[in-house]
Length: 609
DNA sequence: ACGATCACG
DNA sequence: ACGTACGTGATCGTG
Image 1: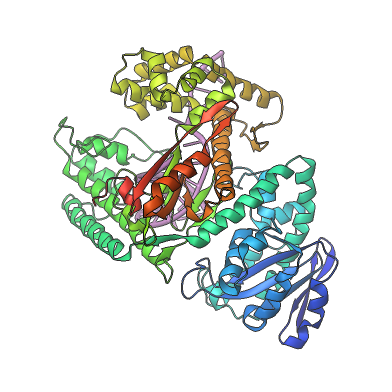
Image 2: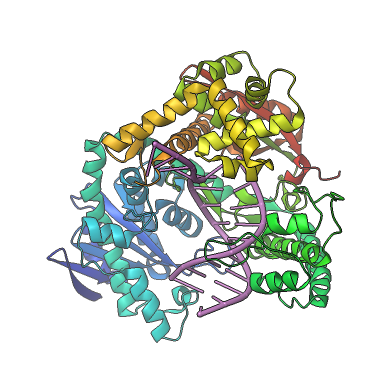
């Protein structure tokens, strides 16, 4: 047995690292001890839980004074027995550890989830801001420094330094560091001691602030989304390999064109800007740092293409601009999507993207590794990579204009409420309110952009750029919107006034406190609308599971649930899911649009049979 | 590490 | 007094 001591918040704590079964004599007593909650953590070879070479190395259990660091290779059975005892656990980022324990030790995450707390969830409820946004952040280190001990070690950073000293990198160290390295064992133990202490510092606060109901909901939701992550999505590997080859070839072809104009690296904005200038193009827009801007919005007009990449015939296309656009897009899709899919698949050709159930400041969910919420929607080729399980079809149901409906309900704007009650398309209704019943297609688009701009708190210049109209027209559009829907602006001003004279925050209908940046109070409307829409989708996930339809779910995508169902009943299943998603929010109908997508996800975006 | 860019809702 | 587009994740170049 290796025994280490460490002072945390003025108290001497003990880290125990058993080396043989006899060392576990006191462990049994520890696990059966009086603590109501034990902290739990794991150390593994990396984040890629489902890749064939992934291994669980350590499992740590601890309370405020004592941590047991157990080798998974020696003590798997002891760990299983300990976790099977009916007691509660707290982890920081519970989902990761639960998925690891499920994958490597066969501990069902559903059962563990019902008696687990997550300090990250609690911290997010108290302050969702990252360090970059001026908050404490949501990592164990900064939270411990604030709530437990200002001198708490940065275990992640400390380990990275130890990795380097031993000749490993940040990426290889987790797998390569000797399992009995003293710093590794010490920090593994300290992580659970800190988590346990953090829990007892912030859990009472969450209760005192009245956030217990949200905490309960988020902990439950997190388990359901972990189930989706464990399920994953099936990848059509031969298709993705072909797609990658096609995209790489396409990128190479256009890189050769760009090289003819002296651009050896299409990703170098400086090179592209210089070559375009040399060809006689004038670049007027600049980035915040003052460099010439050569993004898609600048290059498309130079290439005589519209936003749908169709020929405009407004000017002779600049061949360099077009080559840069096409090679960059093809390369990005090849690397960020096709190659990443191949790299991240498990032994059964499934992808298990990380679902951050409670991620953004607004509590919006995120999906990473790979970013499945951000696949191209204007082109079916990337989404075509994901296929339903054998005999099943991909299905989906999305909320119809959920943010505008939420805005109507929260603001109580009579015109917008009436339009929804009459069953109208909201953007049609906005266009009618602005331009009368005979509005044109461009006018509808402008109305839609104006509505979004209003939610985001945007000005006329941004609206003009976004909608492709003059600033003068954008100003008129904003005035027409304000006249037709006066309740929206009034609602926004109310939120800002309240924040100006009270706490710099907005409280959502679910009781979530969203901090505002003092110089961006105007964002209050967007925050509460975005957050409420998120809460509606989160509730839908819970409701779909409660209705016994959870086995079908694949992924949440902000206002949509992606799922699969046996081909013969796919229509029935997604109609039922859509019905479960529907609700009434403060008297306003939240409607859904169910759809059978097809054998692949791409079939909803124009993929051929 | 950070800015620029681009993918989504 | 005025005006501010919101939220993510991933990659590449640059220093």
